[in-house]
Image (cartoon, rainbow, N blue to C red; front, side, top):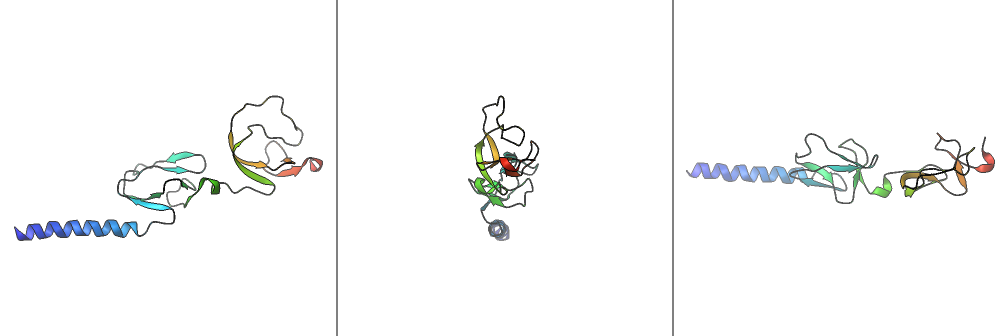
Amino acid sequence: MKSIVFMVIVSFATAYVIADFGEGFCNLNQTYRHCGHCDRVCRPRTKSCSPDASEPGCYCQHGYLRQSENPNSPCVLPRDCMKCGKNQVYSSCGTACPKFCGRIEPMACILICVEGCFCKPPYILKSSNSTECVLEKDCP
């Protein structure tokens, strides 16, 4: 009987040490969770749920997002999700109809927020399928 009690205590202590050992290896802005959950992902702003989402492991802390769908990618603040290019600024609520060379003012535009990088005024997009921002005088 004493050996059974000893084995139970040793098993419990070993499981506890393994859990603590796992917690020590989480990256920056991550927390070890015994049950797991779905991390939100930067682009697109969705939840990244793998079939083993209930598995113990390292998950993003509250307020942080996975930088990509890769479960090993870093956890970052939403403002760090998008690194914008030259003459651009990030907005969580930008226009769905940005100005571009050849179309300075859209005829009609849907009034919804679009998250992403947008040209800083007075810059506009070089074309409808470009991400380069130029001054209107530099339009091709």
